[in-house]
Image 1 (cartoon, rainbow, N blue to C red):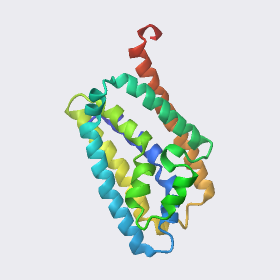
Image 2 (cartoon, rainbow, N blue to C red; image 1 turned 45 degrees about the horizontal axis):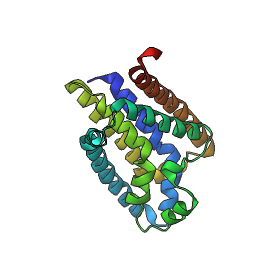
Image 3 (spheres, rainbow, N blue to C red; image 1 turned 120 degrees about the vertical axis):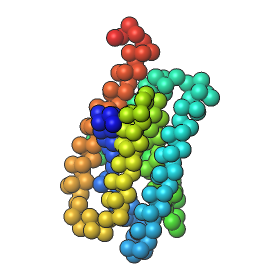
Image 4 (tube, one colour; image 1 turned 30 degrees about the horizontal axis):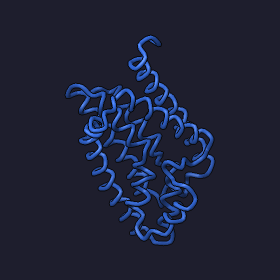
Length: 210
């Protein structure tokens, strides 16, 4: 297995999906409905995120071909989008790309079961995470990298869902300070990954820059 690729994919998805930062969102959407309902939502999330990841992995490159978009052009655009998300994390703000604007957030709170909407789409499986999966999937060559890609995505989903399953316990210990520190740390890691994506794509699109 390509360990470097595994760590990049895991770090990028972990930073975008941000289990610790999204834990308060999960708790607010399942508030006053009991531990049983929280486990039900977390289990539904596991299924929906897994199906979504498989779908993206199988069809991401096909979509690019249909629209005639090169992987490097998409990687440049995706890297820019991911950089914007990273900057929001560093500033301690929620990005509208994943959390929606004010009217959408009101609609999110009204959902009986928030597992599919808004938790899976758009909060966890939004433009940033989808772009990341497509970009890394397009760079894969060989069985070792295939295994690393699948393992990286699976590990990110497992940590995320595991965090939500443990929400009643973790909520007692994770306060605003820990959440703020984690958000900014993940933002810095994500910004570095985004810059690397854009730099690599520019070297191909504009060889003179290299």
